Amino acid sequence: MELFTSEIISTLLESSLGTAEITTQGWKNVTSDGGSVAGKYINWLTFTDNAKAVTEDVQRIRNHPLVPKNIPIHGYIYDCKTGLLSIVPEAAKAGQAIK
Image (cartoon, rainbow, N blue to C red; front, side):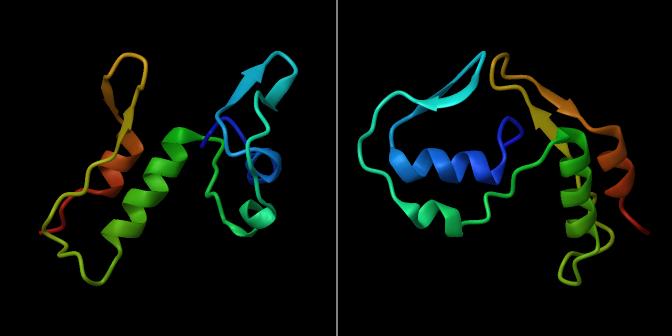
């Protein structure tokens, strides 16, 4: 979700439901199989800063009235290429259990 904007994904989906690819010129569809303008009505929840997005999610969970304050909330970034999880320090701080 960090590699494109809502406008880009909805435009791609308008002309194809196939897998798009990214080139040096940007995103492009490699097929034209289907597609629908309905993609423009979805909030794709894109972001530009992975660590910031994780921290905001942890803060949202930490402050939710149905989540007990004594339960720690953790935030990690998953690297799809390596399979490694990296802790987000700001998220770890925001998600600390409150005793």
